[in-house]
Every structure is written in C-alpha cells, then in structure tokens.
Amino acid sequence: MTAATTTTQTRPRAILRRSTNEPPFVRWLLIGVALTFIALFLVIPLISVFAQAFAKGFGFYFQSIRDPLALSAVKLTLIAAGISVPLNCIFGVCAAWAIAKFDFRGKNILLTLIDLPFSVSPVIAGLIYVLVFGAQGWFGPWLIEHNIRIIFAVPGIVLATIFVTFPFVARELIPLMQAQGRTEEEAARVLGASGWQTFWRVTIPNIKWGLLYGVILCNARAMGEFGAVSVVSGHIRGQTNTIPLHVEIMYNDYNFTGAFAVASLLTFLALVTLVLKTWVEHKNTALRGTAFTPVPIGKKAG
Amino acid sequence: MATKQVGAKKIRVLPGFKLTLGYTLLYLSLIVLIPLAAAFAKTSTLSWAEFSHDVFSPQAMASYRLSFGASFFAALVNAVFGLIVAWVLVRYSFFGKKFVDALVDLPFALPTAVAGITLATIYAENGWIGHFFSSTSAWHVFFHLPAIKISFTRIGVFVALTFIGLPFIVRTVQPVLEDFDSEIEEAASSLGANRWQVFWRIIFPTIMPALLTGFALAFARALGEYGSVVFISSNIPMKTQITPLLIMTKLEEFDYPGATALAVVMLVISFLILLAINVLQWWTSRYNTDNLS
Image (tube, rainbow over all chains, first blue to last red):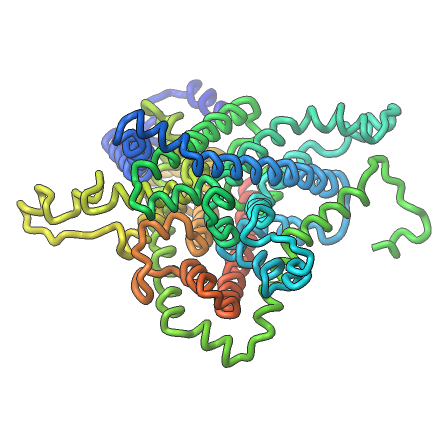
C-alpha cells in the first residue's frame, strides 16, 4: 500500500482521480453502506453486551462476576486454556520446524490434515471424543474399570479445547518459517552452534512475533469455545462449567443481566485479543491478513 | 522414501527432523485423526437401513435445508457487503478506518455463546434493532408494514450466520485488493473504459477467486456453527433446528449412532468444501502468477 501511495503522488492528481477512483457520491455511498453493515452486525452487538451487563448497576454486575459458580467457571476456563495453549504451541513449533526446514513427501497432505479441525463443526469435535472416551466408546469400559473420568469431566473439556485450537499456532508459524528459509540456521550450525543453540538463538528470535500472534489467537478461541466443550462437559455446575457454559446456564435461567455480566468478561477478552493482534501486526507487517481464516497453509506467505 | 538415498546417505545440516516430524504425526494422530476415525468406525457398524433412517429422516432433511439455505444466504450477503467493506478499507480513507479494520475480526475473537445471546437480545421484538421490525415501530404503524420477527425464527439463524461469516470474505478479498496494480486500471481507463467497465472487466475477475474462497470459507463455517445459532433460534424441530443442533439433541437423548451418522454426513460435506477451497486456492495462485508474467 505504501508503495502505491508514493507512486500516485508523483503523478498529476486530477487524471488519476478520474481514472482510478469513483465519483465522490459513489465513494460516500459505499463508505456509508460498509459502515452501516459494520454497525448493524458488529458495533451495536458490542455496545449491547456492556449495556445489558450494567443494566442493573455496578453492584449487580460485580455480584454476578464474584459468584462462586462464576469464579469456578473462570478457574476451569483458565485451566483448559493453560493446558491447551502450551501443548498446541509445542506442536506448532515442532510441525513448523519439520515442514519448513526439511523436504519430505506428503507435506501438502500433512498441511491439509493440520488444518482439518477448522472445518469440523464444534459439536462434532465434542462428539468424536465421546465416541473414543465415553461410556459406550472405544476406551469406555477400560476407563470405567480403572475409575478414570474423561467425558463429562475436566480432561474431556481440555481435550475438546485442544482439538478446536489445534491449528492456530502451527498455521501462523509454518508460512512464516517457510518464508524465512533455512539458511540462517544452517549458517549457525556450520559456525559450530548446537541444535538447541541454533533453535533458541536463531529460530526463536526470528519467529517470536508469529509465535505470539498464534498464541493470542489460540488463547482467544480456547477461552471462548462453546459447542465442543458443551458436548463433553456434562454441565455440572461449579465443576465442569467453563465461562461460556456458565453464560448459557444463566441465560437459560432468565438471569439475563447476570449472563451478560459474565459475557462481558469474554467480550473484554475479545477486545484485548483484537488490540494485541493489531499491535503484533503493527510490529510485524508480514503477519497481516488471514488471521483466523482457514485458508490452506502455504498461500499466506506469498 | 528411504530407497531414494540408498547409495549416498543424505546429509542434513539441521537436526531434529525425525523428532519433530514424529511428534507432529503422533500429536496429530492422537488429537485429530484417531478421534475422527472413531466417528467413521462407529457409523460403519450401522446397517444401511439404520444409517439412512437417521440420515434421511424428515427431521434431518428439514435441518439440512435450513443449515444449507441459511448458510448459503448468509455467505451470499457477506460476499456482497464483505466486498464493499474490503473495498472501502483498501481504497478510501475515512475517519475511524483503523478501528473498523480491527473490528472486522470481532466475530472470530468473540466467543460464539456471547455473540448468540447478544444477537438474540438486540434482534428480539423489543431489542435495539428488532423493534424497528416489530409491529409497534413507528414506520410499521405508519405504512401498515407487516411485522418481521427476527430472533427465534429462521431469519435469526441467518443473522447469526451472517455475523459469523463476515470476516472471512473481508480478510480473503482485502489482500488481493491491496496487491492489485492500479496501473492496469489506468491502462484500461486510458484506453477508454469507464469506471464501471474497469470494475467488472478488470478488477472483478482478479478478485473473483478470492471472493469465491471467502464465500466457501464463510459457508463452511456457517454449516458447522452451533454456539451463536442455538440462542437466536427457537430450535423447533422441522422449523428452526440446524443440523449441528439436531446432532446435539440426539446426543442428549443418548442416541449416539444417530448423532454419529449425521456427524459423518456433515464431516464428508465439510471435507468436500475443504477440497473445493484448496482447488480455489490453487486457481487463485495460478491466476496471480499469470498476472505477474
């Protein structure tokens, strides 16, 4: 974009305006349509969350948030995100290292498989774990025998969260590391650095923004996941409810203000995510673009 | 794989290939592939009669019609307005542009349950936006317009799916528009094309693959969406029940075979769409290299 603006300034403005721009009324019309659409679908819902949350005043708001059930939901959400984000981070770095630094057959299939969880409905993501670990599932009888609960318990929630956030870090790092190539690491190795030294001193500084970006997006989804977690949770109040599930329960109990109060926490998280995301993009312009969109990997870097 | 390098063992400068690839494959298998295989394995134990009974039941057919129909129209509306938003963000400058640009990703960042309860509330008959469509609003009274109920109807499902799909179109079209070389436009214009012709004959064909990709992504996402729809829809079987919700209902009734059969149908459709997106991507990249040469 910056290149385009510098070239335009060197040419006669009037001619350029006429040839590559619309008449002012078309421009204002299009801006108006776009802003109306954004307002109807994004801005008004966003404002409405906070308006509903504070509908009964600050007292009720803080009472809803400090409710023991809400606090246990927050705790479980932090546990689920705290386990799934680091695990997917390790996976993302491993996958990106293998895919970007080496050549092997079947790479494209592997890339597609890594993206697979994005195209699976959250409900189905929960269902498949019920089929594996549920009472009637593959390991169900064995798990019951050994008195291990996965489905309708915390491990199931963690597994479902890992599944839905699986590709986030990997899909940020793979195109980034592919674009960076392997010459810097090879140089470090030839100069005598060990594998770990190369990784920590060359690769990590190169990918730190991409890694942070992936972690931010991964965390947002991990804390907000509803469908998949809903299937495996069992909705035991105070035990297997995450924040989104707690919101659902309060909403269905007609405690709308309470539901929106807790929902405002998640909305605040979403806003922080957007700010951090914009900040990281500002720091590293290469990351701009297909933030959450499951576009097949390999395209983005170009 | 190994046979190629039987004679001279290939020397790799960088370490960790076996470790990282091995871990990648192990983790992928444990988290994604084996659980997904469980769905197909479970379905394969059903007879065809059982399978088709679940998959082609009137309730299932009605849910497909709603899911596919609402997802299609939502993706279509997003294709039109998402293109306008992307266009405006790339080409024009106006107050608050950076804010709008960042806000476009809100549907990704906002948990679906929050989106669901919010949309249900503001599009309800007494909601901020919904009351403009209710029979009590001033212009409905004045013009004798029929009231339109949005929340708890099929239109509500469509609204939620539009919200969910919005960023896909904008974020796929935006980079293509940014990369678009304005000299091509200038050339077309200097050869006598008017603005409308330049758009339809020059710009639109270039962004078409990206637009289609965005459409497919939004459509695929909408098909599987659960969290936001479950609140804004009244979830009445045969009327406002989407397929993921039908799966959920079957799960709550402990009808695991039925739920799995439907899940397999949805999975196969998702994989086909994923394949289509890959082909579209290939088409896009081919188009771009043609442009360069």
